[in-house]
Image 1 (cartoon, rainbow, N blue to C red):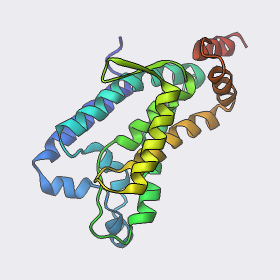
Image 2: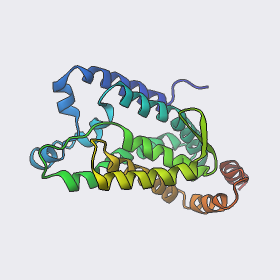
Image 3: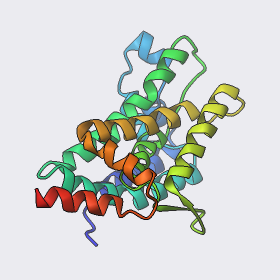
Image 4: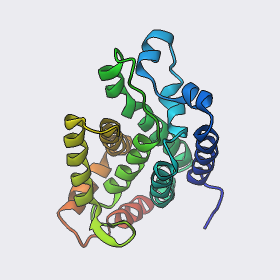
Length: 221
């Protein structure tokens, strides 16, 4: 397996910056997503830089573990469906997903001086849902053990994110998770609209080799 992938580079850089920020409050303050500061002090960097810092080691581990297992797969598929510029599309998916995930949160919290957020969850959600578009019935293993079809896990994830965002009883950015996921699914499909057709055909045919058939069809054209 190739080591120097975009996914691995993002993971390495994110782990390094997150580690440095764990014990450096000033660095974390400069990089965090702070809607009130964006509105009043033009701190736009936070839309992107907040994706490179995390609250603690478990937060970092969960996001990077998920990105490792889904990111490389999406990279490979992008290489087939966007020949010659799959790497660029993957970068756009990741970083535009990060920005898009923050936009509704910014609109909601820009007058709240107490609200801040950090983490790559919005971008990682975008990557995961791009993968769901490719292969809805492929198994996603919760905790590395419990196999659940991606389409079912995805619906559950959307429902849970909407419910918890509305409830608002914890400090997790469930809204960012939700909008990042929606972005990943829609962005990937809109860049190659027949992927939507392939997705719906696969959704009603669980035994179909979804992305394999799609890529073979592209190659034979």
